[in-house]
Amino acid sequence: MKPEQPVCPEASELDAYGRGVLDARRASAIEAHLPACADCRAATKDLEDSGIFGRMLRDWRSRMPPDERQRTIDSATRSIHAARRPKPDGGA
Image (cartoon, rainbow, N blue to C red; front, side):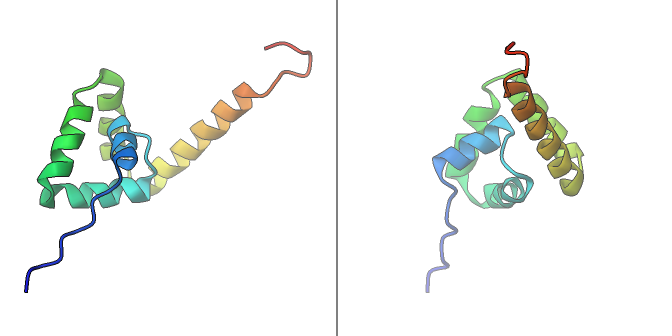
């Protein structure tokens, strides 16, 4: 009997992982999947080479404990949404 092949993440998920914007739980799952999957490693390698910002995010993600990482991401997301809200005085 042939061992069952693990299911690869969707391309959009690999892209989000490569850009460092995937949530901590899914990023950890992809990190666990990569050693066993040459195709996904190759796909993420291309993304890793795509810019300094992505490399900085991946480095930051790898150094921070998952619970702290998620709190930081949630806080940044709230800040971005707040910055995008129209100002009460009508300004941008």
